[in-house]
Length: 198
Image 1 (cartoon, rainbow, N blue to C red):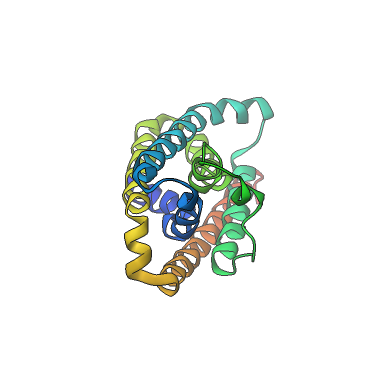
Image 2: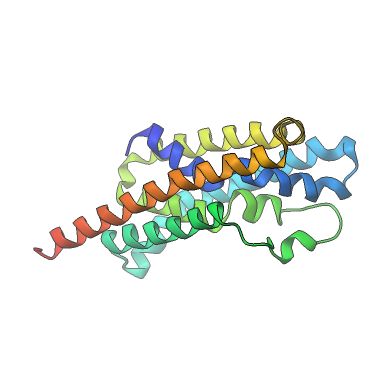
């Protein structure tokens, strides 16, 4: 996987366009002059979690003795389920949205940006080719920068695109992620056959 494809994969999984309405809703209880500061703080929290998992996830897999085919197959399944949720979103986002007061770590940093899906994608990249960690680090940083730009401009984008525009973008990203997840499943099956002489 190239740097560009890794960035696209992580960007699709983070789904910043789909998260804009939830950021806007979570910031309704925050004073307008603090919006930018709060968003920047949550973005930094998310980046710290993403970087920590990028480098600590591999040793965890070694301890659990999980093979590459198993990781690729499970990653494909997870991404496929995430893509389905993007195309057919559930009616409720979860209890995290109902927290009172100013958001702190939850739900903006975790799970809206550094959610289980992006952490699983990082784990997959790093475990398959750990020697390419500078490439994966660059992919995480570029994805974070793109996400930060979109989230910081979230209120303006929400006004210009409107709910239908944001939904259309999220559905499109979901359909692209379906193709990525299916390819990952196929790669996992090929690796399993090769490892077992199939």
